[in-house]
Image (cartoon, rainbow, N blue to C red):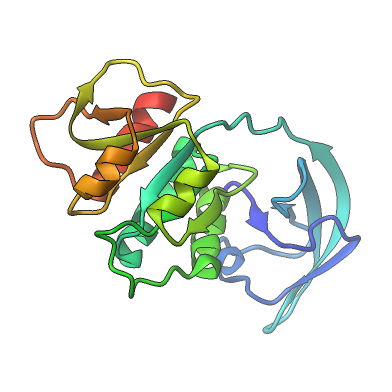
Length: 216
């Protein structure tokens, strides 16, 4: 763990109730810990002043600024099973995806509900582990058409799309659900790209493949 997250990091005094990560590290009084709030570009150094069964008390020693995350990649992802999304989010967070637009497409199952608070907890844990000083941002769109009214720089990642070596980081690459996009949806977007793979990829595999191709 690179740092510990606490929304109140920056306060002179902190009390932490959920400290299983610190227990695993067998921390002791007078030990110093890096804590961040993931809202500003600071790392706060706290010293443990007291450890009880229910909480750990800490006092701020100093802070130092961090380089700003230079993130730029926004991707669109048709809503799929939230369990699949949850398993994929840490990888996308570590790679450096800035924002995900979740879109309910014609082949998305409308009964899938996205728990953004749960997603946020998963991402906070990911950032603590990888050192990212932010988490992925989210926007949700109830339909394909609603999403198209806001953006015009979209490229569908689809079967039969043009296979190109260099993807444009200024485009929003839109990964469809497991069944792909409907014919009606394909007709509404001119740009279509395909991944250079001889196999049919699952939705989450395609998301990671696109992000990796642009960022790594």
